Amino acid sequence: MAKPEREFFATSTVDFTPCAGDVVTLTESILATDPETGVATSLMRFAPGTDTTPNGVQTHEFWEEVYIVEGSITDLRLNETFTAGMYACRPPGMAHGPWRSDGGCLTFQVCYRA
Image 1 (cartoon, rainbow, N blue to C red):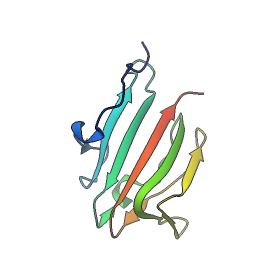
Image 2: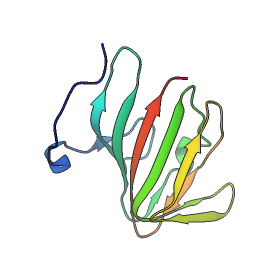
Image 3: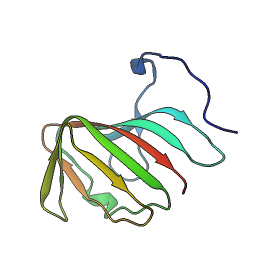
Image 4: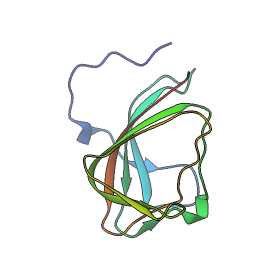
């Protein structure tokens, strides 16, 4: 099975739900997914004041591309802040985070297998 075919639709019709982990202020809106492969396209929201330190440094076994739509996030490990208009392409195994967002942040991301 692949991601579903969908013509343009309002992303506001897809609810945000808590992400995996221990941070309730980190939520995602999954726009399209293939449940068999884990391939997914989503929006991720960091509410103002979100700190993902309880989730630790993250690594994945899949590719992850992230575009910051609005706001900013700070990688606490790197002590570097990333802002709207910036993009990341992370290969499997690349460490990132934990993150903090003082004013909030919205990202668009695509995850896929190599």
